[in-house]
Image 1 (cartoon, rainbow, N blue to C red):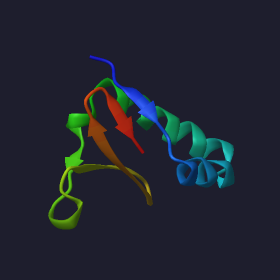
Image 2: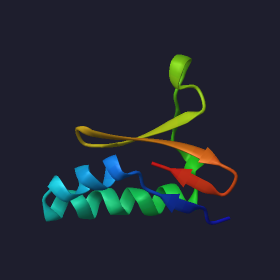
Image 3: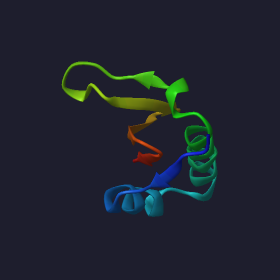
Length: 71
């Protein structure tokens, strides 16, 4: 099942600040998240219900609601 990806305004601002190589790497991870968001590490405690994907020193925190992934 393919999920839809919805990026927040804050996420878009951060993406604009990155260089081309970093954007490409993050977009690759977005594609993996859309394919199977449950393969990433679930978070605990206050962030229960959220997941984390790592890309070098960056972390992508996202939540899944039905067929939409919110980043």
